[in-house]
Amino acid sequence: MDLESIHRHYSNCTRCSLCQGRTHIVLGEGNPQSPLMFVGEGPGADEDRQGRPFVGRAGQLLDRMLAAAEIPREDIFITNIVKCRPPGNRTPREEEMETCITILRYQFLAIRPKLIVTLGSAPTRALIDPAARITRVRGRWIERKGVRMMPTYHPAYLLRNPASKREAWTDFQAIRDAYREVLVGKED
Image 1 (cartoon, rainbow, N blue to C red):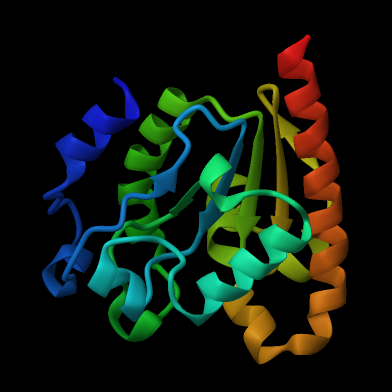
Image 2 (image 1 turned 45 degrees about the horizontal axis):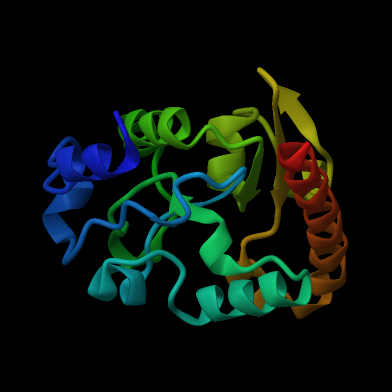
């Protein structure tokens, strides 16, 4: 299935209780052929209202970080581990992530990214290691089935903990370098 078909198929998803409080399902957006995918935790209030990922304060910070790293947002694909807003912006529960990961797997199959950046603990635990602590694994590339994944801090965390922005910037520089390598490899 292509990305548009996947999104159409899941546009009215009711597979978990998160659907009960949502305004919009937030499946993701961006370039469906991008070698780079960002995966956050879940939509916040602004994202739920607009039906788009990372459009609130955290999204604005992510946009600035991408711009500083010279990675155009429209060239990548951005989504979340859960597609509906958890009540009160709480961290998604394991069973919610397990339910939504089916959609994410279909998105991976359609896009076939070479690089995945997990933003925050929830997607890092869901995609890399259930026991992972973001403070211990962030900034390191982990390879699985030919895909390189890097966990880094969620932009909402950086808004609450500005001292960690320096570490996140180091991560984004490594992401930028890997992205450029993949782009050059595609041209060959």
